[in-house]
Length: 459
Ligand SMILES: [Zn+2]
Image (tube, helix red, strand yellow):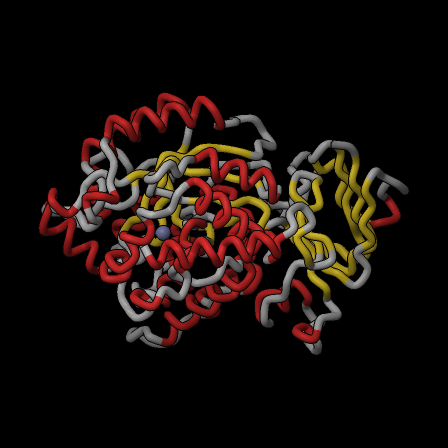
């Protein structure tokens, strides 16, 4: 793998414990791990790969905490453009059941490339439809091609419409088969070592599409094998009505009864929660993937992110989607996290917010770096420090988008319109170079993706 030297950056944001932001700085990496981060003059003079970052800002690679990469095939889907979660899902389930291994591979290439161009270096994906030969393999291989650090889920749905669930029966799987395949992909792909490029997460889809048994069994398997757990929770009031009617409790209590409010779990969304439930998350150590773009798109609500932060709950940022965003742009999502938290202040009835209640640009960046690393259970990414992974991205501070904002470059990258990464590096490998994906020729992939998307929509 060799050595990598990045030098002469105008600004380097470390996200280290002192939150240092260095001028005229760079980093030096050996075999994918950072050896030195500091002023250019103190770094080695050469390396196998040398990047000159004059005019650029360097940031720790962003961590995407929730996504459905296969949904890039149904972005702006006509029947699902103007609908809340349940109607939006119902309109798309038939198309999603037609996704096969090839469509999964190609959509994963597209979504991960888009993420890498927005500064993402570690991505979690929540796939829960494994029909027509779709498999975890298709996604892991695509992630290896693009070069993004990948946490794949073996997601699942087991309760179809005939048993009181939301998805059609043809979209769900047999529970014994789900658990067998979960075991198989853990054996084949899960790498617990520091610097791992591939990990597995068990991720039953949501309270309205999986059974209590499957949630319990998935948790038992995950805990026996040391992998993390994830699901959607408290995303909309539709879901809250569903768990109250069917199980007699709110979504968080339902999860708590099944052993799912715990330190090895993070929930996507967690919008509709009480103060007591936030306290429960904090005590249990479970985390949240905040997906502001999707929550606005589907009119789901505003997650209480500042309350989570004050309580000490780990919060990461996810683009979600890609049919509910409809972008895989994580830097854009960081901006939306900051803006949506501020909108919530303006909707309050109890008077003006104090200064500490404003989400700052640096807090938003922290959510998408250190926060995302924490919810994914990683201490080797999310900051630029010796010993951590060489995962970072750069932005061109000469871009028109930042003109007039260079009083504070680290804040400018959140406040101003997001720009494409100039370089994105994952584990010392250059994945984006000069604003283009360097590992895969994307033009034919996009063409293929559009043909597959049309075929899936036609049925
Ligand atoms: Zn989701």
